[in-house]
Length: 89
Image 1: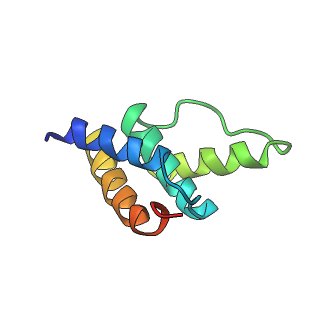
Image 2: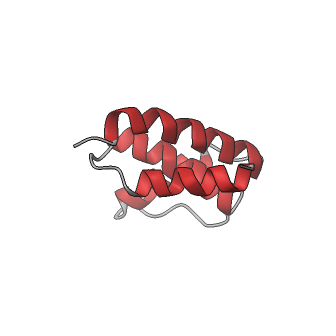
């Protein structure tokens, strides 16, 4: 399979975990996903009253400058690592 197919398979895998990964792992996956699908951050950072939004924005911002292909490869790697812990109930 090519990179795009592997990436989509990894997204499907993450969406179907039986156990929820840690918040830190979820933020890593989120940031990589946004970088892989959108590219660099293109919105302003959420305000004081949206801590969850700020955490997600910060996770995405950490990947700024990374190519979409590299972000996809890193997402696949992270999803594979998480699958070992989260695919079983």
